[in-house]
Image (tube, rainbow, N blue to C red; front, side, top):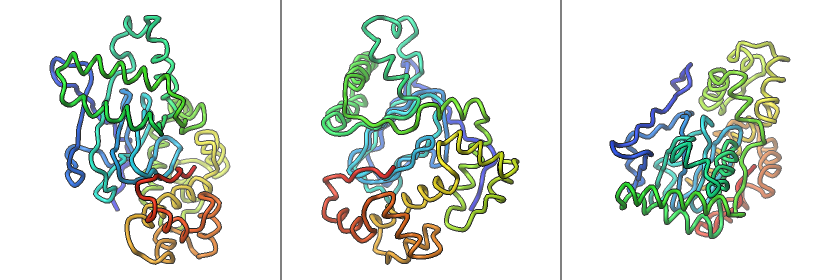
Length: 300
C-alpha cells in the first residue's frame, strides 16, 4: 500500500458570497473530492451521516458507529473520512467553518457564549446521539436548499442547539489536540499513516519508533502523552474497530476477520474483542444483523 510522509492538509474554500462551506453527498456510491486519508484543516467540521455504519477516527479516538452519526470536529483536529462504499449510508452532509465563525465580533456577543463554549469543546471531537442527532442532523441537511443568508442563520441556530444539548460524547481526553500541535503534527501523521497501512501485520516497537525517528523509550513516552494510551493498546483499538467493520460488512468467517485485522491467534482476538466491546464477535455480528436500525454503542 502507498504511504505518505507528509500530513494531508485539506484546503477549505467557501463559494463566493459565503462565509462557510457546505458539501452534500446524496449518493453513497459517489465520493467526489473526498479525502479518505488522515487529514486536518483549521476550520471546524460538522458532519451528519444519515444511516449506515462505519469508523469514527478522530484524534486518538477510534470507534465504530451504527445507524449514522452527527459529529463536530475542532480546528486542526486530525481525522479520517467517515464514509466509503461499504458504509451503506443514505447520504452525508459536511459543513466547514472558521474558528471565528461568523466573525470575531459576532462570536464575542453575550448571546453566543454557549456556541463559543461548544467550539472550545470541539477541540476533542464531539459525537451527538438521541433526539439531538435526529433533529439537528435533519436541519443540517436543509442547508443545501437555502440561500446564503438562510444558511447562515440556520447554522448559527443549529450550533446553539448543539451547545445546549446534553446528548453528546466527548471523543478524546482533554489535551490531545494541544499535544499534537505542540509536539509535532507531522510526526504524529507519519505514525498514523504507518499504522493505517500496516495494522494487519506485526508492528514492533523498534519499527514504529524508527518511523517516528525516536528511541523506543522516547517513543513510548511521546505516544502515551499524545494519545493517553500505550502503542499496543492503541494498535489493538484500531484492529478491533476494523474487525467490527468487517463483521458488519461481509460474511467472512470470524477466524478470517481476526487474521485480516492483524491478530495472530483466535485467543488473542477473542480476548481483545471481548475487552473492547463487552461481547464476543459472534454476539456482535448477531446483534448488528438484528438491530441494524437500532444502533449499538461505540467502542472506546
